Image (cartoon, rainbow, N blue to C red; front, side):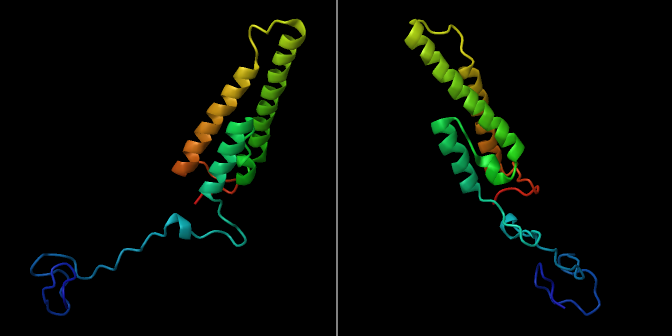
Length: 143
């Protein structure tokens, strides 16, 4: 019997190599499957990191209306993000209507608070998507 570590020929039935002391009876360690080959339930399609990031950044930066959580299956939290984005646009246009009709702007507009909240939430989600910490509704990370 040959040692897998050093290649020394050992007699049959020997438990340890006489040259290096390595265990000759060890079974190979099971190989871990990468995330892309993980076993998913039947009918489940893993979500793509690229698609999730595009759905977060493109509509999120351009319109302040990220839709990546719909793709991830987290509808409730995406409705909250969309609501904050809509409140941003409503307050934004009200701000400019007051300037147009009354000649003065509001000293403090809530539109900036809504946009900052959505932007910070979106950036945190993007970081978590790339790190694999943001999971979909079934609990699986994006691949």
